[in-house]
Image 1 (cartoon, rainbow, N blue to C red):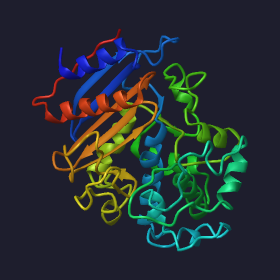
Image 2: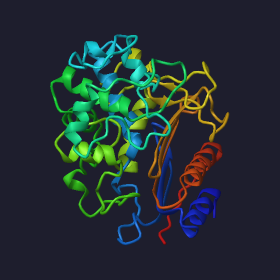
Image 3: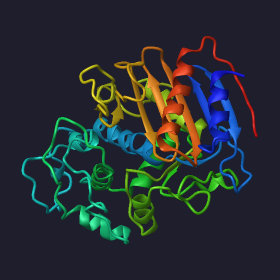
Length: 354
């Protein structure tokens, strides 16, 4: 039994998660697969590389940031322009201009204020929340330090719909998922092909339900958001991550986004502070520590998902779990799995269902 198997088995025994799938490799080959447990306790769907799961905030980079890089490649958006150039009906007063990249990096000033019971834009109606986005000002001016908030990515999805003329889920399907062959990925609701392979994530009533309560209400009521709500599988996410390792290149020579746009997310060592990002992707996380700092990108979802890229080793890892217990331990253990994958030489395959 390897370390990865041991970590995940202990998490299942301790009630931290119901099941997990681990999928890792390089652009050329898949070097590790592990499938353990079930998508959720009440249902018998096992966790597999093709199990479709709500990936929570991993949506931000997998769907929203990727869509923004595509639009930049086509000359449709300037990340250093004030976001109001693309969202002119934003009516709230801003003390200083807020750039598109400020939204992506969570340095915009749009954030939840500690002590407030509800997010300032919150409403039981998803469409009313989108209306509130256009009239509620940020509580702070842009900052150098990140204040993580879904607010930013709700605005970014609105911008994407304005500049593309398409609904956000439709643009992602046509411009990301179809070119990459991600047949089991969709935004807003699971793809029809996922029937019988759906996971149920933390805080939901059924498999295939969006776990983030804001994204759930927005999509339920006919709107769109980029903060959460994407469904995918480890196998599909591997396709996207391999494309990122190739700097946006698809197999066969075509490109999803160009080299110049890729440089927006290329990792660096510019700031060693918790949550430091390169256009949405995390470069440094204190839970991961100095491991691969300056060569890697990562992002996690609150209900138990993490994706990781390292450009020095040309390596990717996907760890999808159905978390049912302690958030901090679950995240720390996913990072330990990633670290073990990164360090293992050689990496071998393992499959186990309990």
